[in-house]
Length: 286
Ligand code: KIV
Image 1 (cartoon, rainbow, N blue to C red):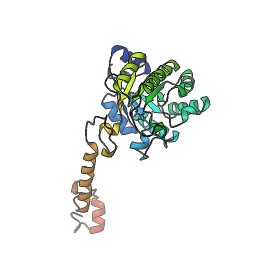
Image 2: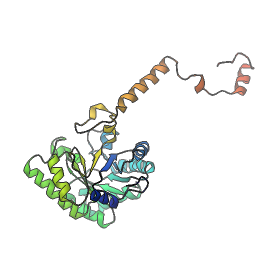
Image 3: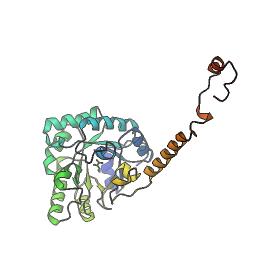
Image 4: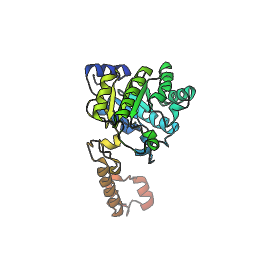
């Protein structure tokens, strides 16, 4: 895929056919979207992980449609080539056709997203069908679905037993038939992710799902290690930005405390003000 042409749901399908891995990353604001774009990310997900890594909640459950719309708008302003996908908040996919269309429509029309993502399997198939019938592309999300953390009893690997694995595979097929253009597989055994990737025609995007998915997604703050206390074991951190930021901010605080900042080069001067206040003498260096 060239660097300029806009990524679409269609080009992602072609990437799967060509065996070309899809790089997806979350972003939550204008600067993170600009940096993801500059790095050549194919899909930017405005994930509701927003709630945990940006808004400080302990799960994604509290994230609202207003939050998602606000952050999606900022991400869209910072993006160009990447396909921007926005998460539908907790419960939305279960509220009936009218509500799901209203929410997904808002993320696209007001937020500017080019697609939405919904968590869940068979239970959300009607919502997927309603959106795709209305021209709203939907990305599915199976395995560990963080919005169900209270029902799952924690952030744990899903599909480790044969029955659970069979259910996830069956739900992947159901979502494909319902019309998803791609499927996120989160925290499932590598063998299961491989089986699903081979069983469905739509691209699979893994997170903690091993090496055989059609693409990978990680959370922006994890890739950069912005907050070390929230680092899942399946993440590869490519920098330690959190530590760098803290070091830099500490230096700033020290400079202020020791009056090393601001320096001469950081101040504004006005000869006129100087003359009127000090009569042209005695004001040097002030
Ligand atoms: O909200 C999110 O960031 C996600 C990814 C973990 C796939 O859903």
